[in-house]
Image (cartoon, rainbow, N blue to C red; front, top):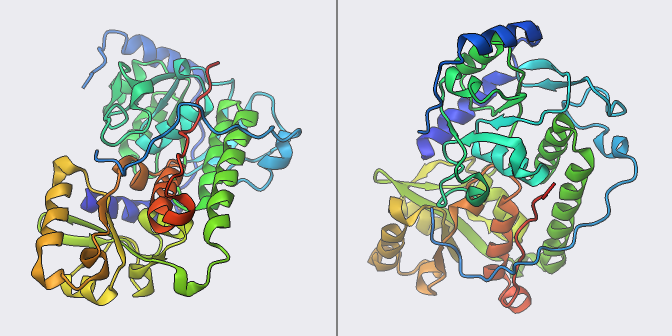
Length: 378
């Protein structure tokens, strides 16, 4: 899992230099549909931090009156004043013209699926990433249940007759090329783990789907919840802030999360001090147990599925005599974090920050019950 993430980050660095492509004529799509009509569609982590989530979501703020104002300066939106069709966006795969509002949407990544289900009714999503229906990783598995699962096979995707295909930075260039040659409208967009980047991801997809006002509502809700967390810890003296570490163990290697990592951004949003970032580490490096001791965390969270060894790893940490003096282990402040909140690449990372904040600020948030996010019904 960690190795995949590191490989993906390398691919992401090469994306920006790609030469833009234009979409193929609609007639090519029609021809491709007839050629592939006979193809059949292949149908091909979780131990959550203790909390209760109320069924009623947090009220959403009123949408901005003029969507163009909120869409200005969003990377990828060429003309924020154009709310008609066609409209053009700049993706990682170049300039893409969307001729009509997409009513049949296919996304190729879990992160994009989680954003998409927050923006459009579920009946507009006709197929999802193979990970989206996994309840141990996905926050929208209940919405994706029963949908066709997308693979890296272009024929599997085209048989869903999508109006648009949303590709992530980690989607293979070969698959994107194949889909574009078949005449599909493909938009490859980034997936960020920082607050401003997530905001732009949501607004760009909302514009591509023609649901700008809903995208603005989602962004407003996220910003309000982020501000609510900041109000708890922002004025606290640095000495009151808790030293936090993310730790996972895969194939015998101990990993942490430094500056620029998804888990690191969650620690920042919760008001903790990321000990790995403080030590000068970036992204998700392998470390030694000696380094863990030297970083001296007061809280350790493990965003590793129990079925992939998360619980065994936690038990080993707690039982290791060499680690007995580490404050987090000494005080029993080690917990398994929900991978769906802590490792996904979408705004659902905010739920991870809220859960971590409950641990870091028990007097202020220990009894808090954070709502899930809302989904559009129509």
